[in-house]
Length: 432
Image 1: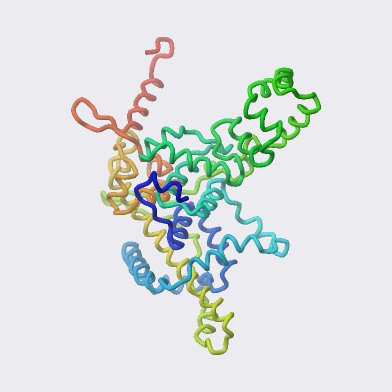
Image 2: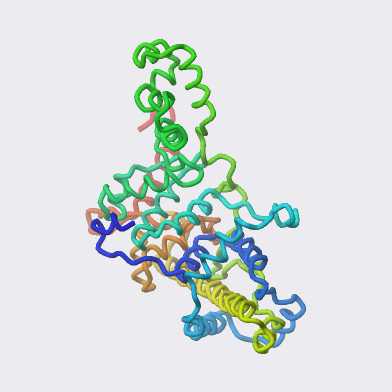
């Protein structure tokens, strides 16, 4: 991706640690549960805390939610130094996602096979992590992915994203082309012609079918076959062969994947008013608690009994398990920080309901908690909060503002809601 560097002020490749945390931050809570189960299958050193032990620990613990978060932050800080010597490049080459491709799935438990089906967004974001993008480039890639509909089509213009992200149109276009060539090919297209053209270019780049889609798509779509035959000097058999190739392309590359915007929403946060303040809970009680297997830790402590290969393998697994547990904690802390900041910014909404929305953009929250805009974007995409006024996607709380005559900044979403109410309440026989 070096050719993008000239367009960007910063070129800093994501570290393996950042890649793992970015992956976990993108996942809604339900998907995180499945991702943890997946990691448990990959790493024998990881294990779930037994339910009985959990109950015993709960009886001993009297710490508040705030104390727990503080403790986790301290553990994260202390845990960072312990993982500095991990060979992360080697780990990600030999384990994780690439290694899963070599597993003999015919031998796996059927129940586990059916347990987790990633959404289209998750599939694309995982592939994006392998493109060697900088943080800025990957954030652009994420915005493109989150702007896809269920068919896999892009529903915003590249010009809009260029303005929103304050990046040149050329950079947006370059990353958009990368997206369309990922699996499923054609995803991210802006219309049917572009979707089919990307697919045919990859499979049959110099074919008659490619010529037809590129130069005579309107005629083909409207079955003006004689025009095509005459223009390209084809026989009818040539046209039929081309038509057969085109019919085998996928007009809706996003179909068949889990709908990210499913009607069955499980909120990631629960917010309740309490003594003129708000109690925020991360809805993760069903997420399994992880720990290192004492069996493997004991085995590693007796390294002299292991050969070099076994010792290296086990050490790598222990270290990667530590980082995975650490990343789960970091995800929780980051999620809570973002949610608390949103509540502080939109206090009137959570207190009084719709109609009290303040203008707010990702940068407002990023500045408030001292994190990157891309981090806030990952936390807010596809996550939901349940409050006294209903269940809302976190993205709902972000909107630009318009300044009124008296200098007050009013949320564009608030304006739209007022207009909608005016239209709904108007006399249908005598509309405004």
